[in-house]
Image (tube, rainbow, N blue to C red; front, side, top):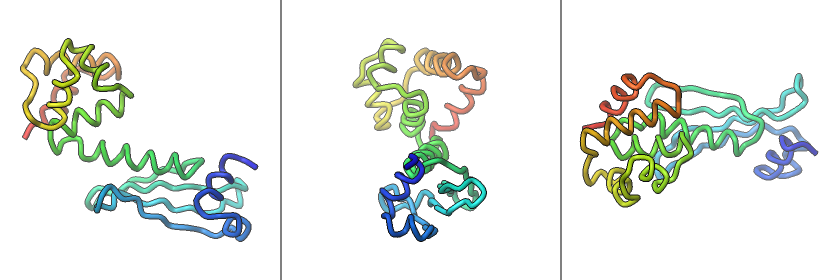
Length: 159
């Protein structure tokens, strides 16, 4: 049994797997629907296709995945990406998730405490200019993206 089949059986059961029954699941973040997963059998590939569909207002993006869990994780990361400009805290949360960093690791990289990062995430206050620029440089180095584009993206999150 493949990972693909195990993923389907885990979510829908053996009877549905045998019947090759398509499914549609809505993915929630609290009360908000952030996307859905269309699961269907591919005759061509002889496997299940988990199509993650992320919704952002009227815009929709989708991507095929090997497992239900991968599709769900992709939808959640897309949601964080889509909402990264809601506040500076949302931006920091997106960065931590995208770069797979903890608050402690980011704080160490910037020479601030974990509590400072926590306060930024909770929008208690914003970083001073030197830390703002240092954060942009660290993100730029880790993502191979132009630091000026990172600064512009970060500044869009300041409301």
